[in-house]
Length: 374
Image (cartoon, rainbow, N blue to C red; front, side):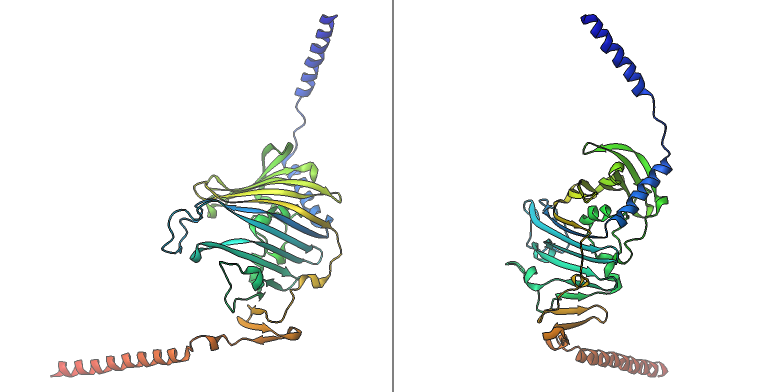
């Protein structure tokens, strides 16, 4: 009886292994890639509006700024002296249909001339045509740093400012909505499709227990062979589980992303990112978690406008002039030159000195001619 059972299991396993060993029909790489791009395009339309709230931390390793140019002369040794952890918050409100974006973040940044970390709070908005930013003085003040009297709190930006709307650690949110680019996108043209000719299938791998299609971009020779690698979970709407950037054959930035299903959409739940320097040392790292998310919510156009509270300092980048907000939202020009040395006398002095030098040169030339003639 025992022998019969053994033979049964042996033969069953043998024939099962033969069946599993039969190779499946090869999939056409072009059609596979086409299905991935189609899923990314659907991500742009399936979610019309979205709100995210993200919390986490950013870690600056010990000594990561030790070689930074511009440090005070009396600063020696490791900068920072130990790993520095900055709490980080990020929030998004996006109306994809009308191309309106609001993104805010609260973290800390390193100020080189003080060799210390200072608050960094800013809210950027794009209402479909105008770019504005809000950096309130009280939110960017600490015991170690206080903004100058005329540091702008509201920026009325030019079109060029939209190139710097997003930050690198927001890649997972961008990719979750089909924004697949090799550079951080221009918010005015976020819907521009990726150049499909630059993508190719590199292979297959497993991330977080999920089989992935590995897609790579073509190396850019103008950036030391830089390319991006995306590990794509095709069944889950082509969600990108891992994103890596290579340069000179080394990884310089990586994201590992986990997802959650919200309203039939696979959207980010949390992610970790690590950046590396040219010697493959860790430059900084993020660990972020989505704590709130709303999909296809109703939004108000006023949500994409900063509040012009009285007393705020405004910089209009169109004419590079400073204003103060008065009651009723009226902008009154600030005469910054009344608080700085008047430069007009410097101009007069410069012309006088130039004229004096020219006059002396003429007199010297005449005298040399007389001497030569004698």
